[in-house]
Image (tube, rainbow, N blue to C red; front, side, top):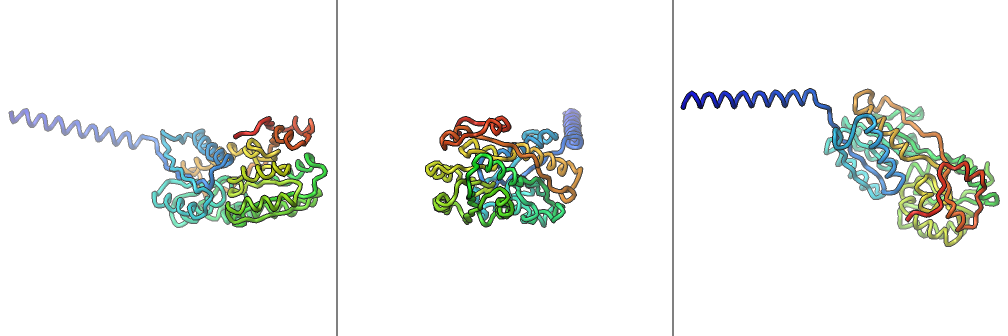
Length: 335
């Protein structure tokens, strides 16, 4: 009995040792896994497309959710305070990287993570320099980099002039606290005169002011041009309802806005922008480069998107050349 007991004990000990050895081998040869905290400032089509593209870009570089990637996703619902809380929670969770989608979330993420070793990747930031995420040469101010969705303002103005040859005034509603919108407004001011327009701007501080701002603006302008302003885009349906009632065309800044009722846009492909960001993030996660070593990148090619249903409803005729030159043409309005 005693010999048998000793044998069993030895057998068990060997089994434990072998199991431990196998476990160690698996850990040493296993693929590294990552956790990324995604902070999205608001829930709307363009930012959702950015997130989708970001995850796809990571996957194309071998970092895939459910295999070697865990994603913690949180939405700030267009609230600055919430964006800051989300960023702080990600730092507390010690994620491997924070992705800030849209300027306020990117700024909050960098401010929260700057004293940690957590790199920040941003996307859909119109002006990283104005947002103080990069210097004038495009170099990161710290462990932060990403992609810009800078608006093709000149192309937008040229397109609006072609669609509305007799228009004199363009109205824009923007959030005064969003650095991306302030930057875009300044560029509009510089260039509207070149296309024979006058700019009428209406600054707001929060969502509750949008309805009244739209009512006021619609009495003063021939059309509205919408920015990638997160607070305004979040309430775009309200603006479109009022503009349609007043028979004033609204021009968007990207494809999703045209789908839901803007007449046209010279805009960016936000899925492609997200993919570009995901590939940059993969490079940082794999240790191929630090975020501080990668200048921010910009998609420079804009695409024309048109909605013929909106044009018909407003009694606007779109030229054959304009329609044939569009990347996408929609004949309905998405709900």
